[in-house]
Length: 102
Image 1 (spheres, rainbow, N blue to C red):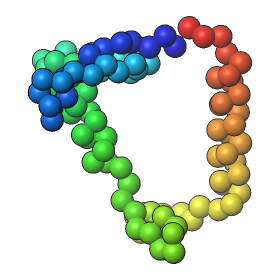
Image 2 (image 1 turned 180 degrees about the vertical axis):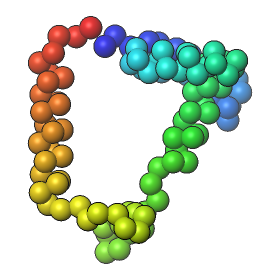
Image 3 (image 1 turned 30 degrees about the horizontal axis):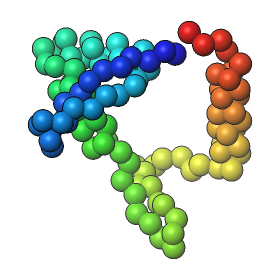
Image 4 (image 1 turned 180 degrees about the horizontal axis):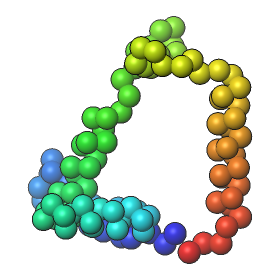
């Protein structure tokens, strides 16, 4: 992954510009979103960031632990499930580490 280097205007400070290094795939998705909506890359990036931030899971804390609100009827998460997810994550990290860079 080489990543694209793009300049994005920051809405809070109209005169300020910043650069982001993003993965190629993310850049192409952003470019397509920008073209589909006929807006600048900066506007598309800002909109996507806002939408992503609004869709973060809501949670409460109790005794320092984060408690996620899940829909009623959701299946319980077991220790076995967590072990399997961690194993999958480790396998994916290993595959990324050994794969040649693009």
